[in-house]
Length: 272
Image 1 (tube, rainbow, N blue to C red):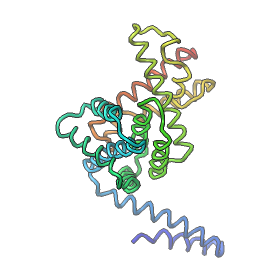
Image 2 (cartoon, helix red, strand yellow):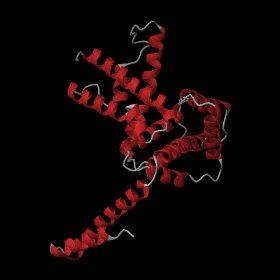
Image 3 (tube, rainbow, N blue to C red):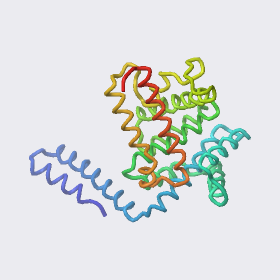
Image 4 (cartoon, rainbow, N blue to C red):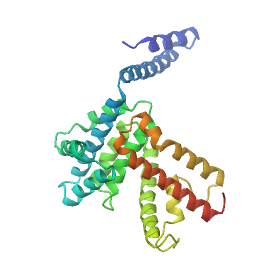
């Protein structure tokens, strides 16, 4: 049992002469330390393969649950899930495993919170993995161009169970919306021969949303945000932390989007 944190916390409070309330605070702080120690111990024996398997299965189970939350699963929903599998280049048994996980998530008795708790434990100390997981779910929710109220409720539960604050969640939401508009505009620009045309290309506002910065932020702030995002979304780093190899392509596309957004901001703002 993990209780030494509580004992030490209370003893330190008493020795410091902080009285009853000090001892109570010491007990609470000690409990946090014990809880963190228990989580570290429970994940210390988990293999990289186990962590990747949990991430992979959870991704498609939650996608299935998210899709079903709107009511009836349409052909469009199934096609969107299939497109995601194509982006990951899933074939054969791996694709069948993803499809089975997706079906499990659609079941009415799917244990959403339990699955998320298990995922959070597997990703303990790896917030960039948690962030990647949430981004995949957000991208799927916005894939049809709108966010259903029930999808939003499920996304809030996902954020809550994964330890993401409401402020962080809203920021991710804004970044994903900007990223989708930016990618669409960037794709249109490439189809027009690579020439930047504001009427159909990506906008400065969308590029800033991709990086989570404001149009009026100074170059130093923008560069810092860019470097942080590139570090968090580096494909090799994510794989090393437990991202399934099948999701490498998504990580690469994310990094490319961040790079393209940064280049546009530099061009429009006139700094190197």
